[in-house]
Image 1 (cartoon, rainbow, N blue to C red):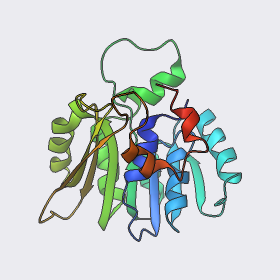
Image 2: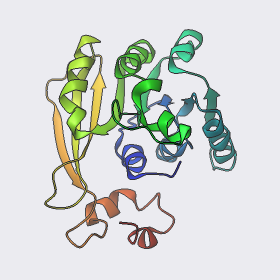
Image 3: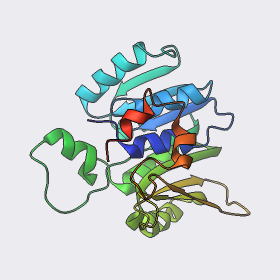
Length: 225
């Protein structure tokens, strides 16, 4: 699977704070886990049910500057929850979100993008079990899923702390949202916005500033519209 803007946004905007243990659910190629390793000194576990993705992530982790802090596990969230004793300061996920509609001929894409492999309810149940009480859970979703996911999170006693509206282009409606939850109800919910591209279709200066430490050649990526 190609590295998408969603992964880059979550890897950049998830608050690492002083995390000691981080879990990346559905890591794919491991890009989010590696971005968080670059931004912190935490030990990071990454899990995925797709064996070829785990193999890719393992190669990427070994060739990264942080091989001693990155660990890949070929397992489901349900099984991982039953076996690990670790509780995490930060849990992140770029989960599958297509529930209905046409499936792709590619089974790999269906696993990555369709909720049949990881429902929101199963995701929240796993997070509730694995998240340390002072910890945080961050994920990126289509904006249309916002209200539904926040309501479901409340049923698992996970409270919204922060939300970031993502606009694909200036003057376009928001199409993604980053949500942060914790087991502790906050005094205030923090809100911010980020446009990905400007009116000319180039990456917006705010996006440039946030992601410049992660792209090898941001200028060449400007042409990928």
